Amino acid sequence: MSILQKELEFYNDNKEEWIETGLEHKFVLIKYLPATGGQREGWNYKFFDKDASAYEFGIDKYGNVPILIKQILEIEPIHRI
Image 1: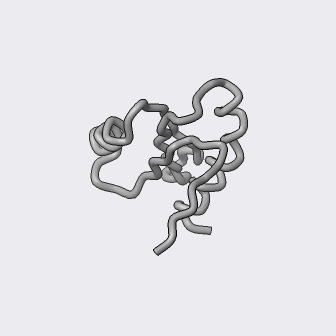
Image 2 (image 1 turned 90 degrees about the vertical axis):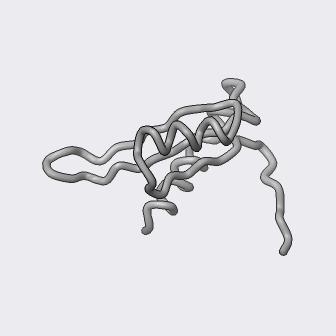
């Protein structure tokens, strides 16, 4: 399973709880940290009002690496191409 798949799974596992606690329409930044050098694997996540704020935080904290930023929505939009 890819890191992105793990991050999306974490989002889906927690989405209902986040909505119940009033976080719907916020943006969540999720970063999976795999186990390295004796460190345990773990999750870092943080909530933001704007996607740009989440992006800036992610770049400052993790550098230019893949991170998941997703809006918390009960009903996910369908985008057609």
